[in-house]
Image (cartoon, rainbow, N blue to C red; front, side, top):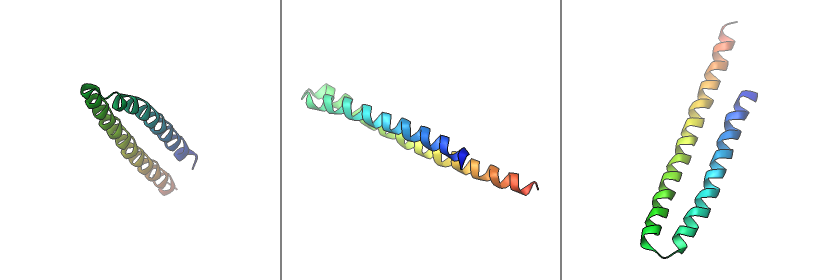
Length: 77
């Protein structure tokens, strides 16, 4: 369980930080009523959303690796 805590904690921390920055920047850019800035805000929102999805996918893969390593350790004995 200890090995699983760090990846989950770091992923949640980075995701929360990205969501916080996403809301601040995108909200301010969308409020400006300038088309160029609105487009930049939407592109930024899409990019950050994909970064968050990639972090979650990476977390799932890492947790599987940890689980497999624990099973391999048990099979040695």
